[in-house]
Image (cartoon, rainbow, N blue to C red; front, side, top):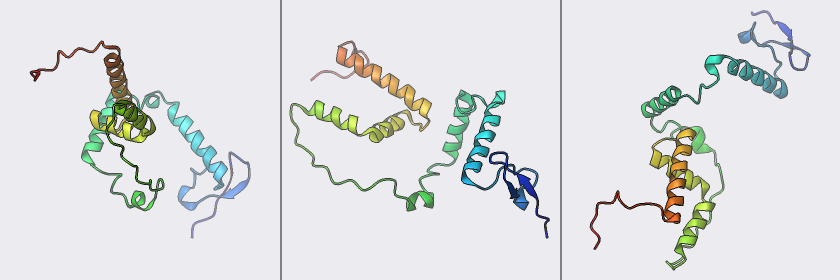
Length: 163
């Protein structure tokens, strides 16, 4: 039988029995606050290394994530833990109003209220779920929308003949 080792918690200072599987590594007791302090310390230590500072922001790491996502399509969607958990209550059916001259305002209000739908649409258009890609696409769409509303957008890219 493995010998029980006791250690002093680096957070609260109390003596605790170390898990036999983590002898030599466990520095914090199993209390929730101490575990959180240990995670924060490990995260600070990991981020303090120069090679890890921009780990999630550099283009090569973004490409690595995209490649992994392509290799594992629908990874998070098929997990049973996400199927069991309800993230929000079911919405009541919305009444669809008939088309009016004020349809533009209704659409703008609907988009303003439907943030997740808009983000999902932008992610679909950019073919990426990375926040940096969504932000860049959002910026381009915002600029295009502002140009259209200001009358600056040109229709030169359209090749169709007017009826």
